[in-house]
Length: 233
Image (cartoon, rainbow, N blue to C red; front, side, top):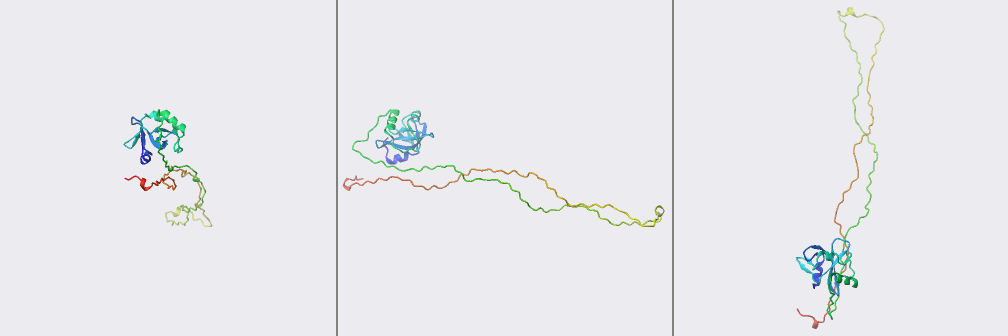
């Protein structure tokens, strides 16, 4: 599968499926052999990414279809996610042996430059953000209220003695006195301790977008071709 630079750039993130249409994963990185794009690492969600060849692959409906079954790709030599180092000769030989394909040599007399670029990977990490403390304090406050109280009031009651009752009443002469016990209430206060509320700390996880400003580098290639040798379009 001979790809242009634009086609190689479009491979990143594309779904990868086997020859029967079963999804294997998605393209994470593109690797070159002898200066030509020849392999892709397939992101499957594991700790390693198996390599798949581009030689017999095809782009169909925006998906990369490789000419092997899913098991063959999953069991292929792999690299860690995000690996950017060029493939070693040993790794390349292992890939050729696994897929039983013959190495292809670059055309003679054709030299080229490989252009690379940095890709930004962003994620999150958890870190302490302070400590929430629930503390109970005793606060004294003034309470003003009223309470009804009773007391005895004394008054003098006079009742005339009629002629009909005079025979039943002794007419004693001399000093005498009468006493009456009086009662009065006074306000008193007492304090009861009662539970009124349960209070506890709770938390919610809130997701918000925060900006990340970073710089990534890429290489640019300029061609300085003499005018007489420049191809006309």
